[in-house]
Image (cartoon, rainbow, N blue to C red; front, side, top):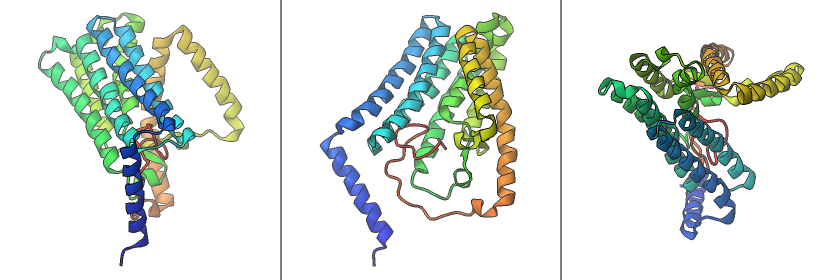
Length: 290
């Protein structure tokens, strides 16, 4: 006898294939257009790096990250979540936040170490792709202890790209050549690469919700951060990066605390269909990126 859940899964999968065969609906055009725009912006960052305009190249990847955060929300708002959008979002992310940052940093300083520098750049791009592949392979799985507890697994791809640029932020802001040391930057890129594919629990947006008593203060802090980005963007980006790095051990400790309070959070659950889920922060993602 066919299980009711299996029948529902098959029916939803058939419905997805029929919609794909008919082509994209008009509602799906908007989020997918944003995804394509993010891809083009990320690739343009490589073009700026080839021309030696490294400030513009970093800005392009940051804009791609902002667009990546918008496309998924647009898809959910318009109820236009599709498997096509999810797969395209992952492919775009692998280029914008894996290949583009790796090439930008290589053209900036890693090329001075032709072998080790290239290996570090390859490691970053490869780990970003592996992370996205791992995320997509778990779309239909509920037995994810970190996700069940409201945490992410490892560092998300867009955040990883931002972290990889920390030496560039400091170099652009200060002009100190030591920040462009090819050996130190190679080590840094490799470290961030492994953070992306690690199994470390990291804080998700749902875990960063401030208490009601301090939310007005948080609004003021956000306003000041925006003003700082406009006046001293590179120092501010470096500060944001350092704050995120400081939150990583906090996430580990917080997850350990959740496990002690609720051991059931680590128990596997049966899988259920999630046909409209998407890649990290992308189209159709039901919650924060994993």
